[in-house]
Picture 1 (tube, rainbow, N blue to C red):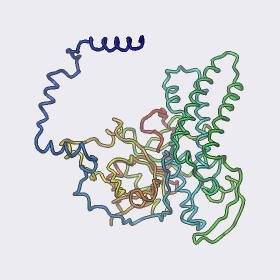
Picture 2: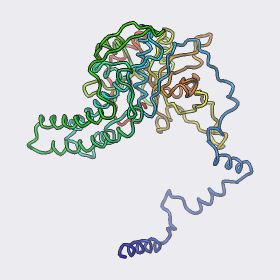
Picture 3: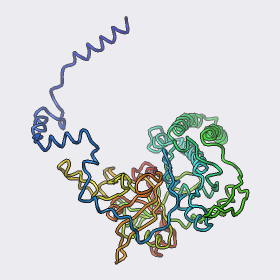
Picture 4: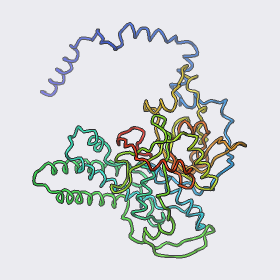
Amino acid sequence: MKKLFFILLGCCTFLLVPAQTVTKNGGLSNDQLQTLKSSYKATASDKALRNAVVTNDINKLAKNYDNATVFDAHFSNQVPSKAITDQESSGRCWMFTGMNVLRSKAIRKYNLPSDFQFSQCYTFFWDQLEKSNLFLQAILDNRAKSMDDETVKWLFQNPLSDGGQFTGIANLVAKYGIMPKDAMPETYSSNHTSQISSLIKLKLREDALILREMANNKGTTEKMLQDKKMEMLQTVYRMLVIAFGEPPAEFTWTQRDAKGNVVSTETYTPKSFAAKFANDDFTTYYMVMNDPTREYYKVYEIEYDRHVYDGNNWKYLNLPMEEIAQMAIASLKDSTMMYFSCDVGKFLDRDKGYMDVNNFDYGSLFNTTFGMDKKQRIQTYASLSSHAMTLCAVDLDKDGKPIKWMVENSWGSKYGHNGFLIMTNEWFNEYMFRLVVEKKYIPAATLKLFDQKPIMLPAWDPLFAPEE
């Protein structure tokens, strides 16, 4: 009865509040609302558009049929691609992309079957453990700062992610090696990362509070903090083993050629397997980026944007698109794929796997314009790099200028153009952000620019969210 009384009292109190008739400066007054209402004329064409939009996918209605016949899948320079991979419901595009670059070389060098893959589950296991350590150690490194400090807030907001970028592949393979997918296959949780990731993040946030409290006690030594951190990481390790399986210290694997014939059967460790099948010198890989909001020909580094605490932050050289394109062309002409990232969802025709700024005419549908350039879209948070893929082809005109590009995606072979996405050069210029190029394809003068001291950017810079 008491509970019902308070409910009724609350309702009565709400009903007795008078309607607000005075608006603050900047608020919408009744006169302004009437002006807005009268601006909509409710013409027959507007009514027809409204009826169509409220019951249909906007992209289908905005599809530019004047552009429907432009699609062309021919490429003058294409690196032969192998079986399409599938990251399923996970944010591991960076890992699949980096491994696709490595496996393309391994397949070509050792004449391996086209469906050969490295174990994404193995590398992801160590990625999640290393990122957990990175977070907890960063909490300790910033223990003297308040909870309101920007770095501390960012850490608690981002304790763990399944996204990442190419330096993650470089550091993880160098530290832990690599193995074939057969030796540690995918699990439900590695293909569907949200549940296990949310649980580990919840645990890490709890652990971080404990570490901060310990650190503020006068009698706590550095050794005590490190011992406590290790105890916490043991829990994370156990959670990862339950979700993904425990990474094997060694495994026996039968190497076959492209026709399925047995070449050898040997026992490997992840390090010895990497030494043979993924023996890349990662110091020869350089990241370039097109960010027109910042000064070109400068090197930038992103604080805490790494996968391994004792690894490398993400560094890149900011360059105009024309120079990035020339490096990409040189690499593809030499049959070498590249790690590539972009704002994948913009103007993407999902049925054809075709990205063209003319695919959809949103302006005509809503009788307005959408006129921001790349710099303005970045400044207003309207565009950022959201997905990594493997750049594998370019189509050049008779003068050697790019017409279109193609990437090998990791969304399965049924998505897009048989698992690939094709983009016009105009789309490439507007929505491509990052490219990882090998040293030999970078002009000498450009390569020297990497020697300059990087400009450090904060971890929360919106353009540098992990690629998923």
